[in-house]
Length: 363
Image 1: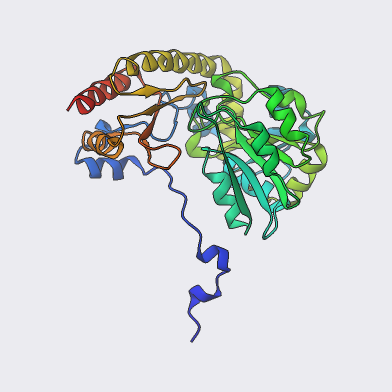
Image 2: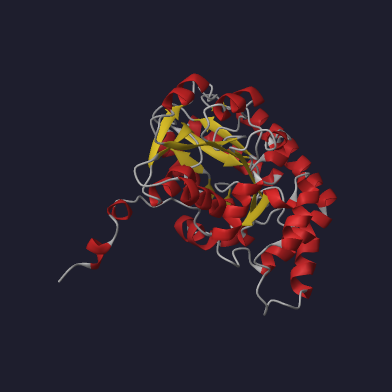
């Protein structure tokens, strides 16, 4: 009898799972402490949570028994005012992850490829491989800047898209307009993921009307604290947006996420004030990390900081942090040997991270 696994597409059988963030209860069990004592700074989440207006709006909404609007009319109109883009250029998704997936399903066929400057967000490669596509990784330079010449040279007749994050995850640096223009000149679809835009204020949205092959992604997960409700958006050429709207799941954005997004836009003053608090704490965290001997800290324009630990001690120090209930993101790849990424949390969380790192590095 044929094994069920043998019926899977070959590229799906070989797929490597994307490592997401474990829930608080799992981390607490691993450290042997109550969940409320866990310091979880490995997911770039907003430590303040959503706006108080979101909580009120979700609790008072009376129509969860109805389906959402498949055409996203109210959502796209509200986002148009926020982004300064036409509603017909905007598509909302179940997080920006869904938009990445849809873009690749629209453009990438089996055996075709995408180009990504690495290191970067892992979902670009993962989603491309789900589609049966190939990934051409182009290493960033020694300061993690995009090697534009090498990236352009990597584009060939089977390249459908170039994906990059700005600020980049996990390095925290941004791409310049000149670099983006050079990539757009290849003719491939260029996806600029601006997940962390609100923490730096640098955007490529003004280029969308000029370049029909540009797609800009945003999310409400980070600045608005809605990671658990999954709401992202893309701004693109109206023809691409129309195609994406026609192929998406009819009710891909649930009503709770829509209610939360609208309430967040209505309370932007509060949320952007919190963003400024995170930016200030980022500066303080960088200053404290730079005082620990043996740690190299990279500049960041996002809500996280990338550090290189003493050579050969990355895993040891990371595991020491985990035993203390402090969970950061650990990297041990060829490009990020002995690196960790720490999300910017509350000041008291920063202080505990600094104290633990100092003790572990000096041990």
